[in-house]
Length: 235
Image (cartoon, rainbow, N blue to C red):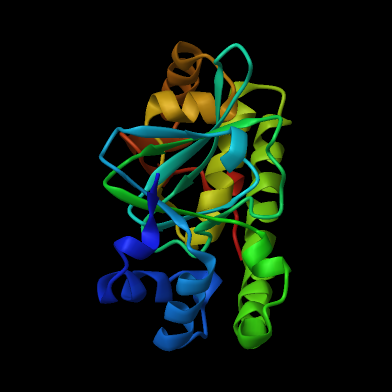
């Protein structure tokens, strides 16, 4: 981990301004907060991973550039895919109000990514000169956490389905409704999708093949088209 303040420049301000955590802040306000909070910084190359545990586990994590997968890791080293974060997604703030002292979180870069870790006391303990800036960021954090809770609810809705086919249909319905389209992409490879749905990859491929043969869906890699739209109505 590096001290971000040693690397901080105008290009970083431009990237941070696009994140929901800093929404509505001026460049000067962002600069002031970074100077005060002194966040830690990590750059990940494509495919590279970093695990957040120990003294870092309580910190506020943010992916402010690039695309990453977020996993939880149990004591035996088994990983569960929690979320995929694509570039520009407004939920760059990750699990900022949770305490992960007893857990292990792993970020794996889909592409080159920039990650910040900030001590929560820089937000929750008021600094008189920065009180207005801290208040703005806290309001933004609440909005970001709302999206995080929605993501968790959607994940649980998929996992609660009894069959693999039902899990797939529930997930595709979520993306169909998000895109307001019967043609869309999902941010998972087959292996990642199997991990996300907690199913065997071969069984997942078999279920997808059956759904394709039955004329319910068509797909190529992670691009899907809904053919039987009665399964996937959206408003």
